[in-house]
Length: 101
Image (cartoon, rainbow, N blue to C red):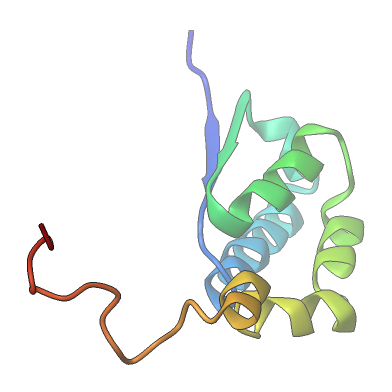
């Protein structure tokens, strides 16, 4: 038996490409794209549209929600943890001085 798997990956702009492709595919098929796949998987941002599609959300509603102005602004900024904790640094975390005894 043939199984069809939808895997989405990407973060930021790359995730938009996958959503646009699925939208075009849905237009060509004339049926909800979520009905065409047996297994759903995603990494990074791709998890969110995959969860929505696997739950039966309409692609258009899902896309509009994920790409709202508020969500788009969050996607296009530095990670809050890195910004708040100073994890982005130009100096090394460790030195090669060795262990003090």
